[in-house]
Image (cartoon, rainbow, N blue to C red; front, side, top):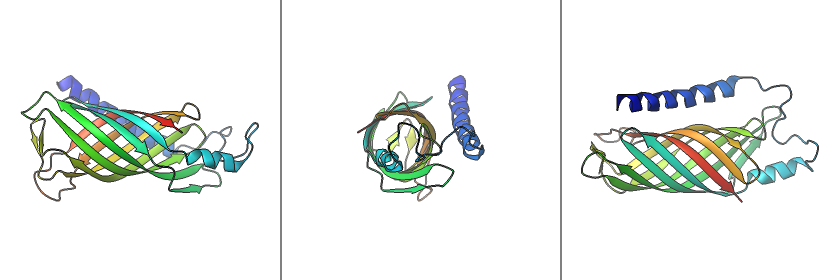
Length: 200
């Protein structure tokens, strides 16, 4: 169990470290900012139109004491900003339903509904960094031997990923759920998640 906790902690640290490095590291000279017309790309508008596509996704999360599987719907882009030399920033919302599973405690499963606004920064056409936080509701107040004073929880995500092609996107993120100390006890839940999104 100690090894599992150490691996989970290392994965969270890796996600945050790479995200911070990618954010502050200068873009290579050859990299083109999102929206820059290139050979075979008819217009800047075509790139921005692709950014507004909606999507269906699968998220698989793991921590040493429990796991999580989620189905999400990503809304079309609600807001976006094109930077002159540093790509594009997009805002959408992830609407999700999740199933949690554990072998700890009396309550070994629970459901969750969520609505998380997500900001994604695209420094180029393929790579993104993401950050989001929003409301979620748990189906029970006890899970994995943990007692939650409120079923209402805030969900927060930080991650990164790649656009494989126009329709397929993959990523990794660290996710934290807690009630922001609205009421005690507030043990929180943490998972490292693999993400897949089909865009249409």
